[in-house]
Amino acid sequence: MKTQTLFSRNSPLGAPLKVIRQTFSAHQGKPARRLSFVSGLHGDEMEGLYLCHRLIQALRRIKDTRPEEFLGEVHVYPAANPAALNHGTRLWPFYGSDMNRMMGPHPGKSLPVQLAQEVFDDIQEHSDMAVDIHASNLHLNELPQIRIIEEFGEELLPLARQTHTGIIWIHPMAGVFESTLGYNLNKLGIPTLVIETGICLRIEPETVDRLFQGMMHLLVEQGVLASLPEGIPALPASRVVYPGEVAQACAKHSGLFISRAHLGQPVGEDQIIGQVVDPVAGVVLEQVTAPGTGLLFTLREQPVVHAGALLARVARDLEPRP
Picture (cartoon, rainbow, N blue to C red):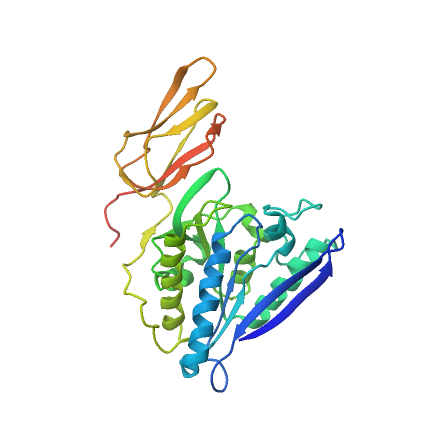
């Protein structure tokens, strides 16, 4: 394993900020494929950090005991935004900047922009494929999923299937994605999968274990590793969710959302999955019902809601595609 510092600056308070890349090179000759894993673009997303730990730990063990298994090259960027990670915040402290909204061409010259551009350029230079790992925000809890913008669906769907992640959600483009890492790498022809899982500021070890197994499958399928390490099981196929197959429930009133369902459970249309209550008046403002029959893959965690707030998403059970 080779450790390289990509970026080293002093923060406004004088503390050093370093971005580290861990590299596992091919055993012989030119790598068959170069695959990069990136986490920590948002400083409150911890599941990606732990997933990168699992990957580095496993890959180092393979490198030490069976180096010939490395047909390709792996790069791991476990903490791409050290300033935000040190503070446990989504945004870069002091600047209030979202590092995952500064990728690709950007006119700014601030310290966060410099870091974002150096990280982006390094990933572009060293990757034939990338995986960008995120957790959800404080408001929503998500089943592990790969999100694919519709315009990249044809190329990315076969790659996403190789990870065996529970859900692959193909969704329409939105303007907010134009400055993200995943969108810009895909536009440059570097296939990039974006993982969304769990909720920020938490780690669910069982979820990360399952994602880790899926990433090991991906490394083998992509020809980076010659074979699966001992102990990695066969995994079930992913469920693909297409545009139009996701139904969402939103609050009609402001109040407290009290969940009556569990993330990942099957639900029936109009089944009660929670309530919005007024704790001051002591009344139930609305019964929240499932917007369709299917799998509950997004559920509100932050109980304080305002009218229009997203409460749940359901991957609807429809007739299978031909």
